[in-house]
Image: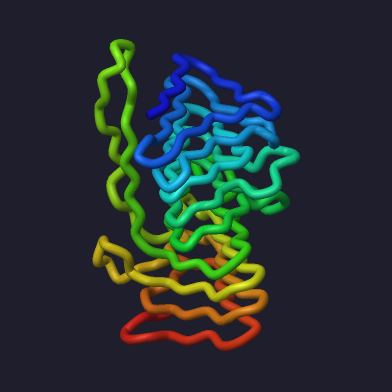
Length: 239
């Protein structure tokens, strides 16, 4: 297991690699500050789990693991200049007090399952681009923290479901090559995507289908779902 901890800000410089493999996990945390990865920096937990967390803004280079959790308590999660792919994982859990990605620079990912929550206190919402097929569903991630005496303790991010933005902020999810599927996840609320207030929604499967198996909603904003193939709604799901 690997733990990298800073009491304030943390910088992972160009070409820095933080790496382990199963059963090891990685925890990188800027407890009271920002966490910045230069675009060529990487964090890897091969076949295992990793967690990045900060109090302030969190800027991603490249993350690779089976399960990835990224948490910015009061800031935004951004895509570092020069990063080619922000997250390669099976499961991805994102939480930010502000934005996740931006309209001009989406967070980029190659994942099977994603969930994201953006408070949107003074930023713009959620902007994600997936390179293959993706399902919106529930994701939880657990890693180990290494103490100063090398003892271990568990750090768990409980299962989170859906894509949710607050404070009238937008949600954009684009898949460039595969299908986009919405499911209720584990929370049982019937929702898969919620843009609160006047936040607008775009879901686009550039080369695939969109399957809506749980509700996709915006309070009063525009809502667009589009696919190269079909857009379908299953069961009692609504748009």
